[in-house]
Image 1 (cartoon, rainbow, N blue to C red):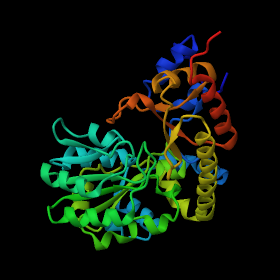
Image 2 (image 1 turned 180 degrees about the vertical axis):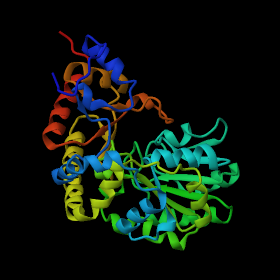
Image 3 (image 1 turned 90 degrees about the vertical axis):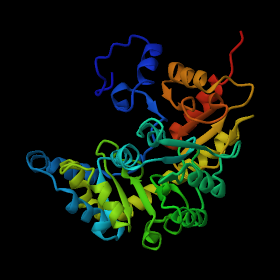
Length: 373
């Protein structure tokens, strides 16, 4: 039995699946291969964990830093002034403030990360469908819809989750300019951008001073492999908007372990860059293997996960997801619950190590079709 496994109520693998499919984390306690959650398996290095262990007494016994000092640590990392940065207990805390409290009307291209819509009060979120079947974002149609619905906040996730596709920087700039004339903030979620090619050139972080209606959100959990530490931030040169978001955050929203991680992170810049290159290399090989499955439509990924349309003759996404777990102890995400056409025909699969990815490919082939004796 895995040392982290809890004394759970499930007795069979099918019961375990029903339990896990309703959870939002804590997966490491249940001894299965997680191709559902999206994080960097190659960072942080062991030295980071050793440092945290060596300093655990001070970290646990003392109050952590408050917002301004934390923003300064992020500022050093991304070379931006402190006053432009808000540090969240994960990006989800900032999303809750934006969608749940600040926005009168938020517009989000879908399918997308559900939390932007889920965090909004009923009737305050507009879902804008991506082009089908390409899942590309039509900037002009999106801007028109944002203006027509009176949205004061528009969201673009790039690379998008679940599609893993990037929105070109030129499109984002054009969108920002269109929305600026209508007092609409453009929130660009770059949580997965570290896994895209030429990330320095396609990020909007260095350009926020040119576009006062732009804010960039970054969940550090994904790229830095620290889901349990809960760190995210928002960056904007619009100091009035920054102050509104900051006012929604309580004084000690980040714990001491997360703070200590931010203190030492600049020492590991090269290790971080190397880890992202390794993730990309694994993902690219994984993409090629998925493309080789007959009848599978595989969308070229810019993040560390791959979005697929299952062959028309294969079982549905939920059926395949369940069989993968029950028969092979591997967990992926189907798209049921996402706002999109034919949701049951799509799955999102996180890339892990080459060995694990190869095992997933073989398991997927094994469960995609009903077996006849």
